[in-house]
Amino acid sequence: MSEPGVRSALVTGATRGIGLGIARMLAARGHGLSIAARDVSRLETVADELRLIGAPRVLECPGDLADTEWPGRIEAAHRDAFGSLDCLVLNAGVGTAGTIGDYRLDRLDKTVAVNLRAPFALLQACLPMLRVAAERDPARGARVVALASIAGVYAEPGLAAYGASKAALISLVAALNAEESGHGVSGTAISPGYVETEMSEWIRDRIPGDQMIPVEDVVRVVEGLVDLSARTVVPQLVMTRAGTAGFVP
Ligand SMILES: NC(=O)c1ccc[n+]([C@@H]2O[C@H](COP(=O)([O-])OP(=O)(O)OC[C@H]3O[C@@H](n4cnc5c(N)ncnc54)[C@H](OP(=O)(O)O)[C@@H]3O)[C@@H](O)[C@H]2O)c1
Image (cartoon, rainbow, N blue to C red; front, top):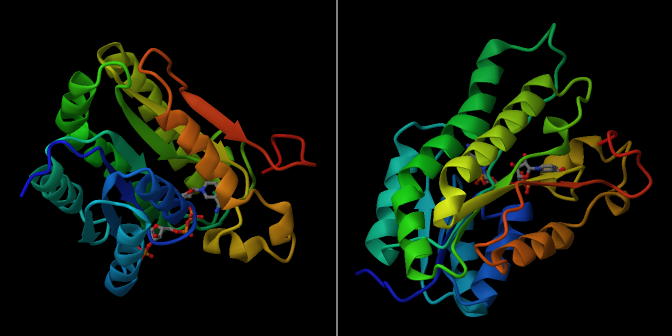
């Protein structure tokens, strides 16, 4: 049954790392939530935790973002439950390292499917719900937050496929702002350097966790964004690690 009065958010990749931190913050602020990831049992555990923290309703949306049917199914489930969408968090992403010369094209296809096609398809499907939320609350509007990466802003050797997919995501958010922000739907692409999560474990021998950006800092930035009025658009935020020269991720 639909719960039209409840502020709601949809978070992809909500079971670990940055997505989990954002989902916890939104639950504590009383948002109803749709949470998406592949691991069903982890989704159930996280959903229980989010209900305890304060989410009035949590929908579990298991599936692989690389499946082209999946974004439409998530959107339909969220619409049935909530009717509108105040905050869309395009967080789930994958990354594998490899130089251009050696990179396998089937890995490129998977990277682009998860990091670009799925966010594009989900954003497209969710636009009507985001517009409904913005019309209902014109002062606040509706927000899209996309987790890009500093690799999409500055080139890093060995991260061409990942970086290109994230640069495209930044561009997608810019286009969203050009098309929709005048009507209350705007987006921000957040581009952090290494964040201390499972995804960055592969480089922990060179960059210790305590020199990485804490998940909590990304969450604080997202919390600030969802509190902005609809009159302000923040197209892109770059978060660099202290002690680096910005373009070093
Ligand atoms: N960590 C960093 O250093 C860093 C830096 C800059 C940007 N980012 C970006 O920030 C975002 C979150 O990163 P993170 O470090 O929090 O990642 P993480 O710890 O690896 O968590 C990834 C989340 O996405 C889900 N996911 C992964 N592949 C999926 C797929 N194909 N379909 C559906 N769900 C999928 C995972 O759950 P399942 O495995 O159960 O599906 C998990 O919930 C990503 O877009 C990443 O590129 C990360």
